Image (cartoon, rainbow, N blue to C red; front, side):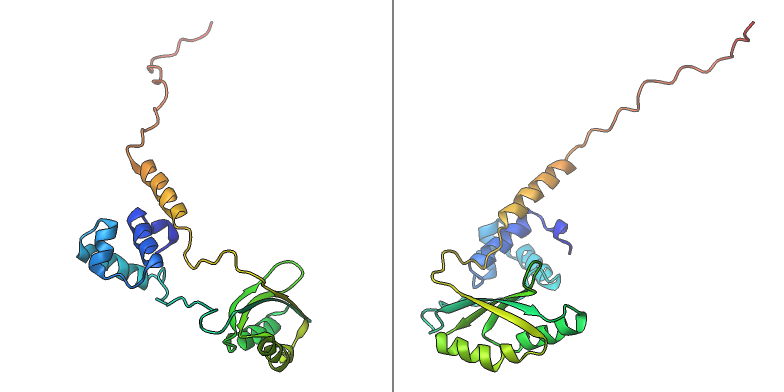
Length: 191
């Protein structure tokens, strides 16, 4: 299911599930204006298509004892496929790394690392990150305060695009074929 195939109802379903994935199918159907069977069918299709990848619980890092977020810029010695693969495989094994992006610009990767304290970050850095083959430099920036954090995608953009596409499908006037062709007759010979 390509993103263009999502309609306004799909966007409403996804929006509600982003807010509360524990909604029952009946509650979800009611919230989006469908009966339960078509709603469940749409959710299953969104899951099959990979639009809904999984359902998770978002925790409060402070309350679970992981209040420190560190943004780490990593530069590799060489940006070749093998080096990228080695680095990415190593990062995927570390639970402290909650996000990792291959970047343009000065650094090759941007990581978001979540830890309990500075000692835990130092241990992660010295025992794991600096030991990954091919790492050339590491620059760490500590978040002082989280101003905004969302897991929900801005689906209002999807709904607006869907409305525009839907409006485009309604009775599109056909182009006029142009002026009528002159009647065919005999040509007069020039004198």
